[in-house]
Image (cartoon, rainbow, N blue to C red; front, side):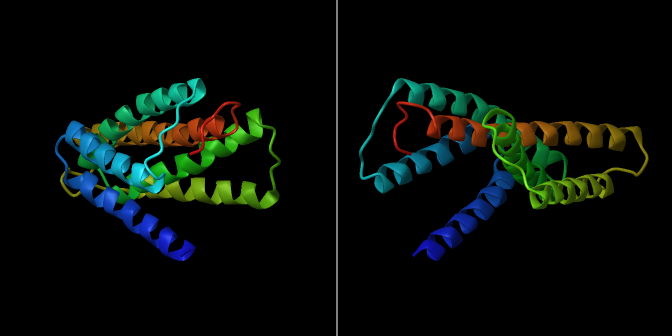
Length: 180
């Protein structure tokens, strides 16, 4: 059953990328994904809803991160590669919470973790540098400007996606937090 749930999560994650590319309006996508997510979470949680002050604050912070995340994500996908966007997003989702844990929660670090970070970051940089858009002429000012905007927005996606993990962890370890 656990493997089925993991495979379903991977399938849904891939579907999110595909559908994000198709949406023209960030607001429509945000409303649709939020409505589906709400229904799923209510069903999974047995239609039991709990509140606490720290959970409401966490939810507000999460929303304040997710709204620009979706809006920037759609702009990024209109400027460049889905693969590069995905790599920045996933790397941010791993590294930002990792460094939060090390710096603020005093978690230990292993040599394997450092090696993994170096390899993943190096791969992302190589992919981002080698990215080319067939719709723009190589070397043109327009192409360079688009690449710079794309890279800056990918960094924003990196940070925003990482912040979602930090907010979730901070909520999880807080006194008075409700069960996820």
